[in-house]
Image (cartoon, rainbow, N blue to C red; front, side, top):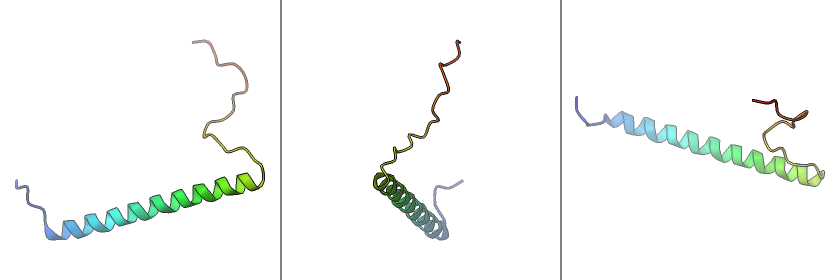
Length: 59
């Protein structure tokens, strides 16, 4: 095998990275919008974990 990449692979990689960057930017923007909406309504932000119903079970 060789270590040489095909010229088309560079363009595909570049397009893929651009799509990833755009998706990350959109996700960040959506998260910021959620934070603003919660702040406007005086709601606590979700921490990503569900509240516990009681003490943790013994191991």
